[in-house]
Length: 338
Ligand code: GDD
Ligand code: MG
Image: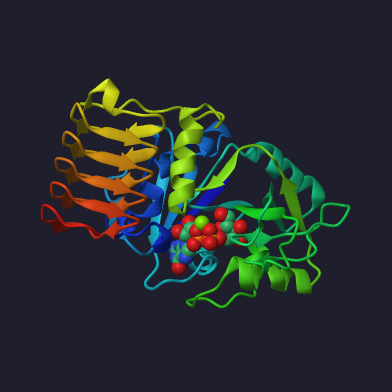
């Protein structure tokens, strides 16, 4: 069975990191998120995946899949939304196939989901997970038989009241669902394709799984995914040890993930933060609840709180940044306050 992975969104909620690294390539506990998705596929004997790229497609050059897995690429000429890129590869889809949002970390039991898809006779089976607040997601109420009643993308607080089952971003689909879709234009599973199938009375079912699930697409959730892996809450996912780390133990507070070749001086203090690779932190610097991009330098005494710092930034000595998003390559001279 073929799995298509949506990987062409702009990742706006994780800017400026996503200017240089598309969301699926951002590391979770020192391993590209995409590798975690491919691991889930491997565990369920799915060995053929196609990455549907667009924005930032060139960054995937050189990415290698786990051994035994074939990974293809299809690049859209312009942003085609979530369903448009799937329509683009329709000719290669002869049989039941899978679609993954490229920013979801979960341990979904794909084998059980596929088995349910087959036994229910659905044309589409949607992995659903319960959340207390559905406003950032697609709310998917089911009837008593597990059939999808409605699909409400980004419900208002009134519609979302009390939480409920949301679209967890993995589908098992029959190629027939793509038939009536227009080719070569932007099209959305959530706002167009699923509501159309439901209007037509086609069998669309939910597969509910309340195991671990997170969408890594906001700063808070990107950090949370790290804590969840580090604290053992994500089945089948462990921290990949970083190479070439130089860090004084006292400098590292709780909930810190640091990638390859990071260096943190004694007398610095980091808590609840993720450092990508090659980050240099000088003495007396403080970093709290922040995500620091590749090859960033934080100089003596700089203080960063709730920041997202793009690749190759240099934060000069003594700066205090709070809630800042710093563009890649920027140098902030010593001494400023933002
Ligand atoms: N190729 C391509 N082209 N991919 C795209 C495009 C596009 O134009 N737009 C978005 N994507 C990809 C993103 O890269 C991501 O992997 C996936 O489609 C979903 O897009 P997001 O922007 O992350 O959507 P969301 O998180 O707001 O909502 C979606 O995911 C929720 C679960 O995490 C929806 O599917 C919701 O219904 C769902 O609840
Ligand atoms: Mg998302």
